[in-house]
Length: 186
Length: 372
Image (cartoon, rainbow over all chains, first blue to last red):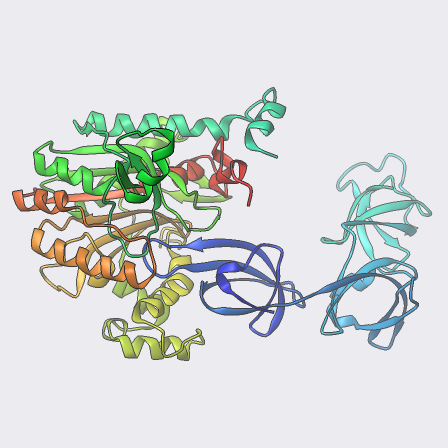
């Protein structure tokens, strides 16, 4: 839908420089000194990059509809991740490049939101925190509390993170999906 | 949740109120700063018949009822305009303060409410806002630049935020060095530096619109010089102002000065180059905080500009009203050579409270008052 830039609001999806973007901040600019302008921050849904741009309020921009559906991860097919809608059993293929190193958060049946625009997947949104099982952690050596109190642990997805030395193999831990780092014991 | 309710919930939490109480400290400091220098604090009206003529500002309209009638005749009287006068809330106290300059008051300042309609709701705007204006006589915009530098340091010290004497204002994780002199850059230099546009190109309507087009801005045959100029200023220049590290590795506020003459309704043109006017704005962290002029004192030129502004207001479909003739008369009597400025107090408070929106420092931001 074509709208005037003056009506851009936080939370809208806009086609910005031909790429779908989420509006994360808006400010009406220098209205007293000249024509009205709308300054906004646009977060590119594909790259995550945030760009600021100031449109004339009367300029046309395209508001787009992004649908967001919860899906289950199935498997990796070459370079594509395959997800399934647990209600309709529809499957979608998402290029691995779209989520970068967050592929290390996926195990079969992981639930995520797939965002689509124009029937094409454009992004994968994870819950802020997820639980993963520790498949390898070196035993903490008694008395060895000198130096760093952290060690590397390997999770069921293959992801390796730094964790406190008391974490043991077989435990479940909470991981922050934004920073891919250890939060706490589950 | 409304701010007053948030306060109610958190009142026991240490320091929660601080971001709201910064306002009274900042206002105290401003008063002290000017009174120490012998400025008179004045009060001028907010409700008037002829507000300023700025073509891009919208006013709040109301009505002054000078005579009351019986219930039955009231509606008719209103329709006939009997005992009812159109009235407006001021967008700034400027014209009235200048009348006092003409009356001979000397250096004056005021902290008051002003009202601007139709500006949308944003982190840096509230339709009802607090404005600080000061006028220094026998002075010009260069003197006002120094006032700004001194005022900010004074507030920092009064707030007790300058313990180590390094003049550092911490805002949103960045250290701003308020030590004078601040960075000064003319509009011409800024267009050259940040956009690669020469003074001649900047002032030429056709060329500037063409450049805007080449840069990828939306341009059509309706695009005016003013729109192209502001597109470039807002997108390519303003984000750098008060943000750049100097050679010493410090970030200083920036004073952007000497605006194209068409962008300075109440300021004096430069004697040395009348294509420009003696106006400046200053910025910290890309945020505009104040707008200053070497004030225009020529009654004839002022009247001509106001006539032009009122025409523009009509073209833009803005509320129409008559020019303040009293103001022109004040200039005819003679207003001393003056440097003056308007500073947004809410933004100042936001800055010293280290908040990213003025809403966080207002007890009752507009969102908490109106449903929309």
